[in-house]
Amino acid sequence: MSDEIDPDWPAPAYQPSDDVDTTPPAPGGSWPTAWLVALVVLACVAAAVVAYAGMHRVRPGANQAAPATTSAPARPTSPASQVGPCGPDEATAVRAALAQLAPDSKTGRPWNSTPEDSNYDPCADLSAVLVTVQDATNSSPDQALMFHRGTFVGTATPRAYPFTKFDRSGIHKRHRGAELSDTSKL
Image 1 (cartoon, helix red, strand yellow):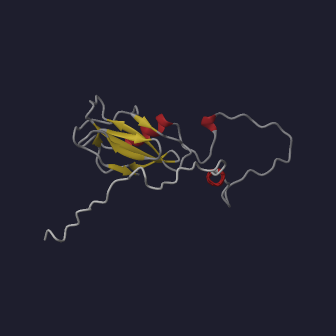
Image 2 (spheres, rainbow, N blue to C red; image 1 turned 30 degrees about the vertical axis):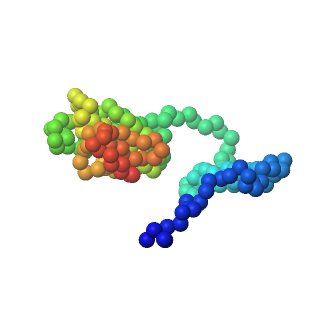
Image 3 (cartoon, helix red, strand yellow; image 1 turned 45 degrees about the vertical axis):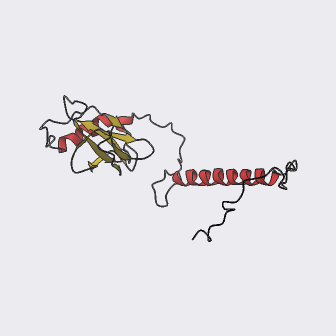
């Protein structure tokens, strides 16, 4: 078996006498790379503008105000008297939602109407408010109340969980703490 072993293995390391190309790169050789990077950045910006503009486009068939035919001044209205597709303010929506929920099944305590966290938007298709029980501790259960245009549509999970926080990049429910590493996208 010793006849099969090559005594010159592994190959010898780099020797200074080896012929290595040490010429510096030509000046201006990175221009194609710079143009490519600029083109990619421009394409990303254009895609972002198109996506953003598409989110705010009026949908076909949506109610659009007819042009006014008279020059009578518009009557000022308060936000509370405006009728439209948006829902109530956060406090009103939370109180209405909590009226539909039973107290927490584990602690027996009613839910606190003061939000722990919120991204509530009365005009959004989906927003959420995080509440906990009254007289809560750090490990008390939290419940995510979900809203569609200010209307309560239910809770994020069937049961309440402690150590819950929202991630502002979207509606995610993150369970705080090392023992709970679950992240549920809602």
